[in-house]
Length: 92
Ligand SMILES: [Zn+2]
Image 1 (cartoon, protein in one colour):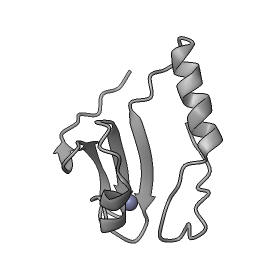
Image 2 (tube, helix red, strand yellow; image 1 turned 90 degrees about the vertical axis):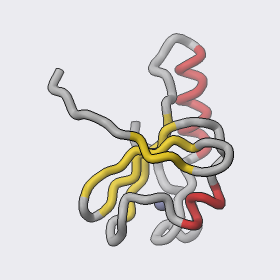
Image 3 (cartoon, helix red, strand yellow; image 1 turned 60 degrees about the vertical axis):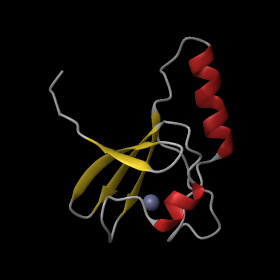
Image 4 (cartoon, protein in one colour; image 1 turned 135 degrees about the vertical axis):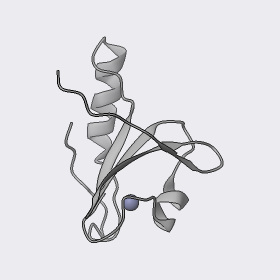
């Protein structure tokens, strides 16, 4: 689900609207969709975790989808570092 970037420097950083996160986790606890991860974009860059992304990551094991100027990659936020994940797009 889309959420506002509430960081004071949204051009170079992101911070998911805390209320949106709370709402998503609350909905999950009440039987809604599982919060598997987060997404954001690097409009002028690569779809790899930036140094800032790595510094801000919690290591909670969730999936980060990062959209770059040449596509999207999925990463798992493991405690020590991000791991690239493969994915397949299927029609439903
Ligand atoms: Zn990033």
